Image (cartoon, rainbow, N blue to C red):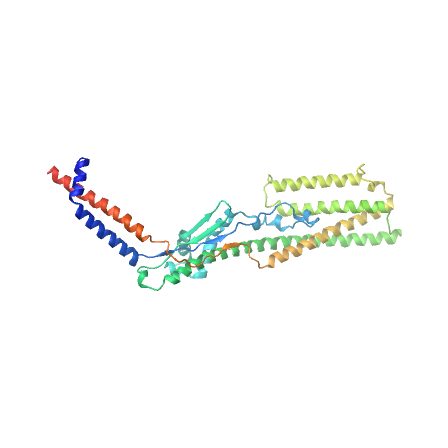
Length: 376
């Protein structure tokens, strides 16, 4: 059959085609409106995590600018939005939501894993170019929603499930931060015990030296050199501790690790210059008379251990607070609220689309039957 024959066949049978198409549209409309489940989505919007510098750590604490948590944890506060999305897609987040809303019953599954799998298929996450996360979950009614009163319940569930996902993200974040803060605290506790032992030992040595030699004071110039050396030595000690905390978790070519090692080398060079009498410093310790040098060495060691001890104590309590704090880690821009309209099914669009499909199908059937008649 050529084009004209096809067109004539359709026009000749137009009444039948239009009648069947019209009835199909009405039938599809009635099924979608009265029988088909309605879907609802409620969107929650989350701000991207704040960016913080990862450098700093113990040595920066000497100037009061940073804390160990940024070094130990690498900070979940430092995480990007993509990490948030991966956490939201995780099984842990899914299990949190399923348990909270008893979704095993909603999905009519036999166990947690199957319910989580179904929930993850209904999860929709969008990441904007600004790093803002938009999340919603597709929640549906049962069949014949027009004749039941569950619409309001499902609307509320759609909002609750979306908000629960953010609560799951916050819970996972806090658990990880608490765990890492605990490890940091335990490490610092060990360093405090070591430093306190060294400090007590040096103080005892100083007392014995002063009693034996009846030497109690030093010239102001030597005192200034001791203070300067103590600060450098304390920074060396803090950098060594910082390296001890991070090197087991970082690769050898990591920028943070390389920067810390370079800094430690420079500090040691600076301290050695002071020890050996570089022209950059007014007094070198080798030039101080024997008794004065021993006294200066003891006083300097006490000054160093005091600096490190105070530093560790300060960070210890910071990590203890981090370990026990109960503050939200996720900033919500807009909470999910029960939606006013369903997202599906699209009754009008689907009815028209179905009508077009039926029109084409009936036309093809009629054309095919006419072609068979012509061949006979």
